[in-house]
Figure 1 (tube, one colour):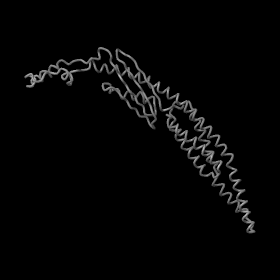
Figure 2 (spheres, helix red, strand yellow):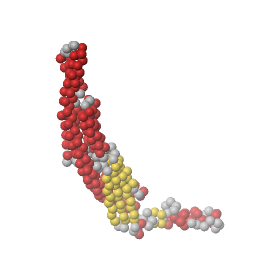
Figure 3 (cartoon, rainbow, N blue to C red):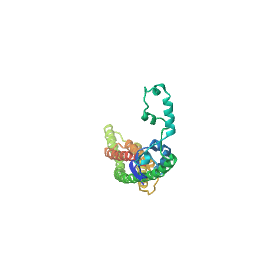
Figure 4 (cartoon, helix red, strand yellow):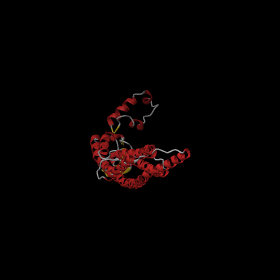
Length: 296
């Protein structure tokens, strides 16, 4: 089954006055790479959220962004009165403060470490956020995969179009290839006979046969045609499979082999018509190779 590596998914919910939002985006990458962006107080959940993605996605750079907005009264930080009193006591001992030259600044005191603290049990709040965010991460990943699947259908259709073009041009090449040797044989005989007639000599048939055989060996592309046909069948089998395993690397390898055979055919084909058809084949393979880079 073909699946694209680009996609997007999101999920959100309100829970006990807190709004949770998870967004997941993915782009092409040869391997799997996760980038998790979390609020500082939820950083401990990074490994678990990455595991959710890793269990569902095999390749691509996947970026997850999490935002949390607490609109409830519980969002207010609590004042640690003991810490505040201790700071005030120490500040008042400073001569400039005790003498009245510098007034006490409440805002500055509240910003001191330990004065404002998260409300309630922080571990309990983290445990609750873990349950909510993992559920949202799974939902967002499901939407991303669904979009990847839809794009995969488009990729598959494009592959089929290019594979049909390659198969069509390959049949033309296969039909025309034997004519190259026949045409060369006719040209060689005509040329040799003309030269020998002028010199009043007689050509040995064995010499002509040997020369033709050497040319036929140099321009023989039957093996390349056979291998390219087999690669086409293999490519069709892969994109038509119903399995859930990623196939991008397999398709990438196949396109490299297909291009190798096409290049060899081009180097062996002196005929202009064959060359044009092989150029079409190479162009189609390049288009496939470009799209294969986006397959998971």
